[in-house]
Length: 287
Length: 287
Image 1 (tube, rainbow over the protein chains, first blue to last red):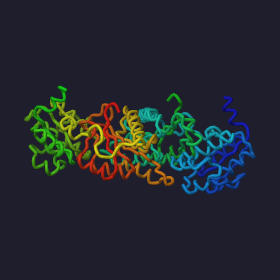
Image 2 (image 1 turned 120 degrees about the vertical axis):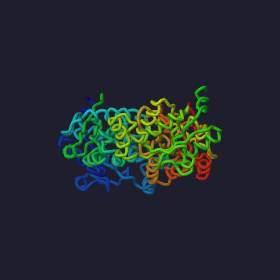
Image 3 (image 1 turned 60 degrees about the horizontal axis):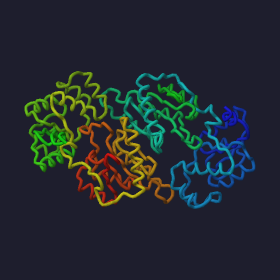
Image 4 (image 1 turned 45 degrees about the vertical axis):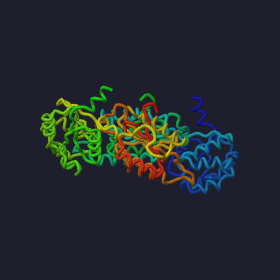
């Protein structure tokens, strides 16, 4: 509780990447009456926030970001929104704040998250506390229970149980924040391609039904972060588009880890689920 | 050992589906000096074997197959080769030997293997012993150790260990006979789409390298059946095409479960691996 309270106190700096998320976080902070400073990333931060920015920096110019943070000395730094992979050349030319070329090479060769992870590490090394969106704007997360009007039936419930067991089994490995499951049959395990492409695969599998029956009846998209996943860098996210893609893939609904999955625009997401007849359920720790 | 010996004795009936496998099995049996009778499946069995068939039946006319088996009373029945999914209508119209419409509906709604599994069950219920290709033609399986000239390096070895651990974790679930792994990063888990499409996914992920480094260095295709998998119905299979697809996906090599993976044309597979610089290694139980 002390921890939770402390995330809502002190000055906060929001570093805004691309997409709607930074806007939603800013709105959440404003609703909560929490003052914050805003750093925009040139070429990433969207128009509405760009106008409000206290500073604008280049993604790779971490020295500039660190200088602002040093001047403002905030209690908390929150990165939000996506940053596309910069070119290797841009990274190799960036560098002042980075320690050495070997570290850069390692970052450049790594997965999508490695740059962000390295940046977070550098900000922390400079004495700042970095928190995730889930910690400062919990109202943006999937709650426990039903998000829309459609209920989970027994068929889907069996799929959810299988899906959770599969995600649990895969938890030690660098793979799979989501699965598409029909009963005891796993249609697709998400890899680095992401949820939308994974759903497209499940969709392709469903496109050749064997007879007029529903071959993948009770298909559910089950999504949850891995144990130990750094949610500041990689927070599972759904939105109205996820609902549409899941529907197209033949899903009866979505089961999401409550409090650990971001719902981009909860009202629109629930409305889309209701419109297409999909359930959206947030499950807790014990599920 | 008594079991192993008994698989090489007595009369044998080979039921030949599509693809090269039935031919290879027939050749293996001939090499071993083992007599056999051949049932061709109309529209599936390839030309070279069709001419040699002792009987030709329709895939769905199990009554005819059972009548032949009753007349010949073989010690062993071996299904080999693929059978495409017949239409639901064909299944519903087939039926004399099938017990009831509910069983058929269940089969029609199931996965690709359910029809074959049901057919094997029915043949067994009629008092016949059904064995797999791996039991009567072990010379077609991947041996332990290297299949070609290329050696496994330390990078690939780490990938193999991760891949085996992932397959092991997924073993209780109906998914994943294969994974593509780069170090500790799982690029793709095979679902019902099969190994070739899974490799195409890994290939797409590798197509956007971050910098000039090798982002997925040491990528390995690791393939093994699940614990308890019925190898008579679903035997993991590779061949020259798998080598080409793995190469295109950026793999350094293939690690296959020895004695449990069919290698279609071992000489051509090893030659293709050597030509493209990929290792192919068969790993044993303890790996």
